[in-house]
Image (cartoon, rainbow, N blue to C red; front, top):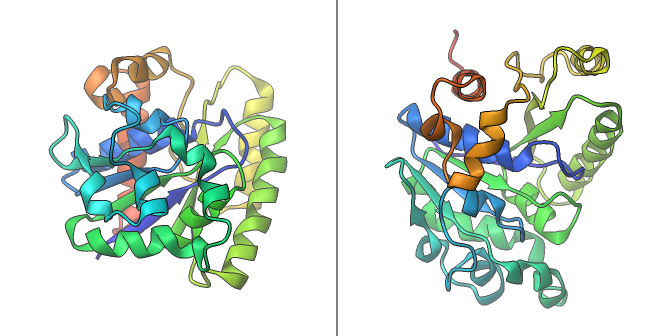
Amino acid sequence: MIKVVSLANQKGGVGKTTTAINLGASVAACERRVLIIDLDPQGNATSGLGLPKNEEKSVYNVLVDGLPLRETILPTELPTLHVAPSSVDLVGAELELAGIEGREYLLRRAIEDVKDDFDYIFIDSPPSLSLLTVNGLTAADSVLVPMQCEYFAIEGIAQLMITIDKVRDSLNPALQIEGIALTMFDERVNLARQVAEEVRTHFPDQVYTTVIPRNVRLGEAPSFGKPIILYDIRSRGSESYINLAKEFIARAENVIR
């Protein structure tokens, strides 16, 4: 049965797109059929997987023109990983959709077209609380929250939980928290360790055991249009995302590890 997961955090620079790319690729490498929907106008998930931005057919056309999602999907180097690309036109989508009734459900309806083709769909949402992010949350079964280990991230996650509660109340009552992934972790910094401990205290059942470290190779990979498992399989970043993928699958599929 397919699971749709929205990666969301309104605070930018927390490793959200890096997690969308590398968790998606690592889950695909575990022989699961994966689609990444790039809902961020910046299109970093698209380019980070080696695909050109601003394709003639993109998620923008799905939301604004009613194009079937299936017609936008592109292959990647991994046979089980596909991408619905972003477009800079998404910047104006919110204004263009302002007068459309049920605009919060556009992505949810579009996903119905491809549900039989994938095991997991990851939605890379913008780092804001825009209509695009709301579409991602309304379309999802659950939310995965990448969180950088710094003080302001705690404030950000509190705001996100309020947003998730509002979406549950009005648009998607079944929305769950899939998990919280600690990212960009530097074990040498006391504050990072303190933040990680505090988050685990507040969300004891939702924080993944796997922590994503700061890693040079992980930062380099997008410029080569590759997920870390194809760019440097032996790096700490690759090892961490492979472990996170295994943990994610175990939770999602209720497998005892």
